[in-house]
Image (cartoon, rainbow, N blue to C red):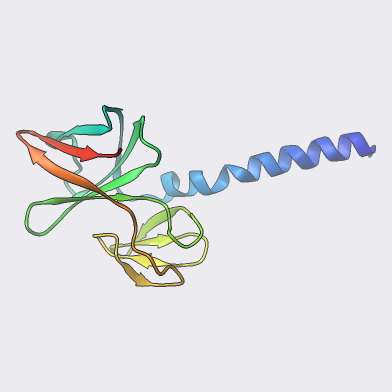
Length: 139
């Protein structure tokens, strides 16, 4: 194999591997996902579109990251960014917790660290019910 061909194939392989972590979350998630748009730094989610499981992943154009909406026991909602605070790894749901695919950090339904190596809780966005919408402040 020529040097040029080797370098080209190596670059193609690295580029393909760069997309694996992002695909991991979508492929392993056991919760419903929504694609919406953020307007004026806010994502408005119709309550009727939230998954009956109480957990809905949201990808919003205009928001930096995907986030998970989790219904709390008191009827309120938490909106939690889906990037581990340790090294930015993707999170997947396992046994009712969010688990980092990179190093195994675990977070509860409110985004609090349950087990490290992460030491910082997940980023939370302000979320409030207004009429029949859940409004999440992403900026």
